[in-house]
Length: 455
Image 1 (cartoon, rainbow, N blue to C red):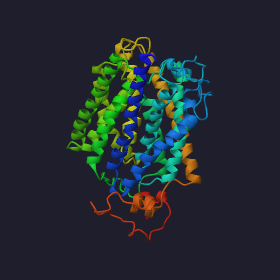
Image 2 (cartoon, one colour):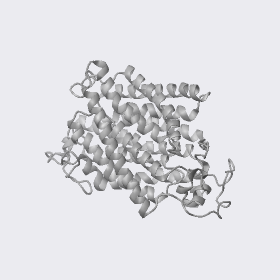
Image 3 (tube, helix red, strand yellow):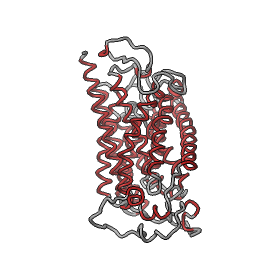
Image 4 (cartoon, rainbow, N blue to C red):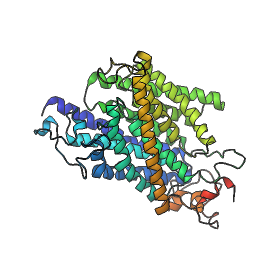
């Protein structure tokens, strides 16, 4: 076996394992930001969703994304991952099934596993945004179609040689492919589900719903930060020392800038530094730099991350003013900053870092060509993803139903959906409602009575 192929394969698989470990980060972040009564539910969703994603992506998603086809989706290598292995180690000529991945010589199964963990990440983004009121099995069905159909189609447009790739759109590690797609799914779900009961009062004020364990959320953010050092530099899918080292630094620089910007912005807007905003500032910086990490300087990555940190602090109350209930801020982190990071490629890219790829962005003498291509991608992916997810949520609503009953929502999904508790030995905080005290309430869903307007 060629030594380069061996090193590239080890690098690709190790970074894929880091991305897989991000599932633990999403689980703990989302659980920490949720009320105690929903902790088991959010942990269970994040644990099971990777199994759902793996099945859906193996069965059809990988072929739709990377199989040879047209500008819209793959037509070869569908159904249960089959096709020639084009790595030098395979010992046979490439037969043209997954041509879009022919630029890397690692074995086919290494390519599949690396792309799989990215698909799984997109589904976990949605989990927190619909937390506290989504039916467990409806969410799992949604995740299957996200990973098996919607995500792969967008991925084909950009990474599979589709129409956006041909239009000059660039997204190195997934600000659009992963984070914006997940963010659009989260937004559509939050809108169709409606807010949690009592979240928005009749007088326009908002009922605070603090997370039950910021220690858990902080640990989860550290896990995600670590995982991003697989997410971004691993997207080289080759052990290129100079490239992976620089991408690690641009990734970290954006994270620290996001942390500091969010911390000081929350001081200015809220009077004191808010830990939740600081944590989301870190994630916002990481999301924003995911698309441009290979194409920009360290100085540019600091600016990109700092803008992301400000945006996330401003976006969270904006969504609340729009009465879009997102318990963990997933739309603010992943959607808003997925868009910002994608556009940042058109502003900050420098051809000297990866010659013959993006060219220079607007701020480095490249004019508006690259920025226009990036904006086209943001718009195209946004329209398609939001409509596709809205239709999917609507179909689930009229078939399986997507929202738990009012008494189950108030009593907690841990008891109602799982018959379990994350903290059975003690009670940290007495809830305003309990499963027993609301048992006499009607069992219909609260979509018509949210905010207490009719109850």
